[in-house]
Length: 84
Ligand SMILES: [Zn+2]
Image (cartoon, rainbow, N blue to C red; front, side, top):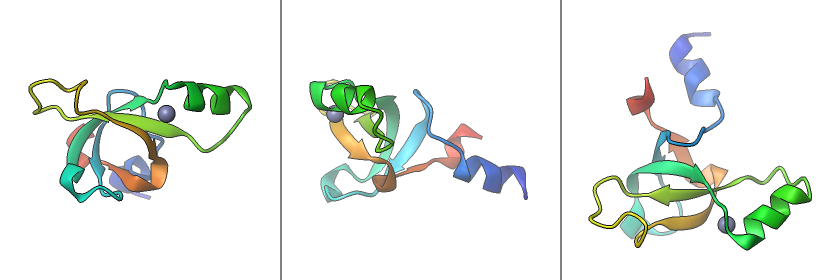
């Protein structure tokens, strides 16, 4: 297995660059991934859910917090090769 393939299977870590390709086309593209810390996700984490959700910020936005996407499913994002 190549290092590149291994990286693509790796877990997404806080601060990783990811590509969003989920249900909101206007937000498709590169984002920075963070763990979602809303009340719903925090309680799901506490209960041991394996359905990890992410909060995505747009590195090119003037106010990344204002345009952040919350509760994004793992399957809606792909770890970007920009992390390599
Ligand atoms: Zn959340």
